[in-house]
Length: 236
Image (tube, rainbow, N blue to C red; front, side, top):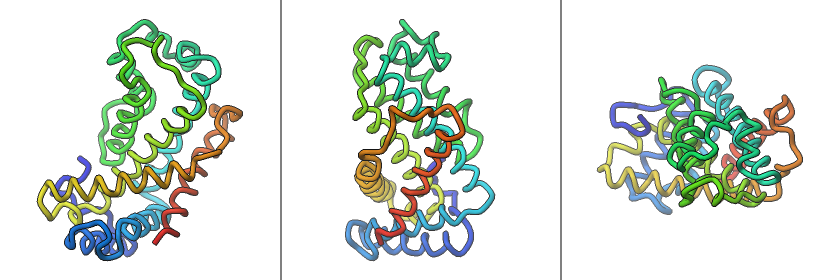
């Protein structure tokens, strides 16, 4: 999935424009060429934000739901510890398990079963990155310490991974017509840029005082994603 060479990407005028900008940027070697990485991400974010229906809209809803689940788990871990967070979210079966099992459990918690679409794959890819960041090098739960700053970094990791994968998927062959190494380099530039901007956007946002399990929490998660898309659109 992801940026496989047989996937032409999103359709419609906004995505056609984004693919043209990305193709020009990638063909010139990335970096500051063409509209630069900011221009590529701005065009792609605009196309995502404009999606009023279909797979892209569903992907935004799925990402918001997963973001709310991660925010809830991370906020409880920051205030009451990781074991209590797992218990509260019905993941107490992971307590006492090795870190690999904890990671797998967290991925399932955030992304559900195996992906059946490219949009599902983006959620699962982001969940894998967030779960890996959650456990880091810890061998057991006692070594995992989460504070508010780290909880925010987990959200940044998840959202940056998800948004980068969605951009790559919808840009399709605009990034993959070059060599695999060049395509990987362009994707990494997008990921780095998205990560830095999201870190700036999320800084100072309330996390520990929100009940992420109710409608307000889910709405805040959805709003954070929409805010991010608007910020990226303005960065061109």
